[in-house]
Length: 121
Image 1 (spheres, rainbow, N blue to C red):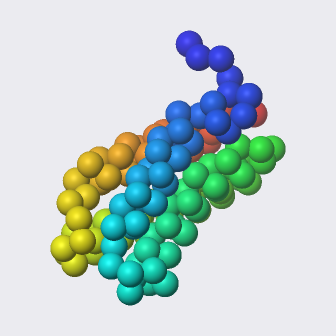
Image 2 (cartoon, rainbow, N blue to C red):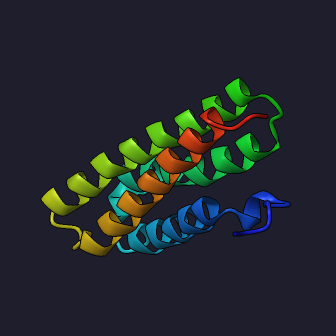
């Protein structure tokens, strides 16, 4: 059994989300320059929102507050899922590895949210 997380950085879901953000930044660096204020910017914002909302939700005290931030992170993950589809369909890059990482983040977020809902605190 794991020790309780002391900071959001201890959460596996945040660690994976952060890896996803870093990968999105590297990916969008390769996009055409005319995408800098379009897809690149939107994709980076949405990816960052996943990890940022996990971090913010970690410090919230009540279940409802925590769940709200994790739900926002889940919405941002779905937004990123679309951006991965768009990236592939525009022929900008192969996104198969990023899709797998995002799937993992989504599953971890779902499990973490379920755990909070089922907890006694």
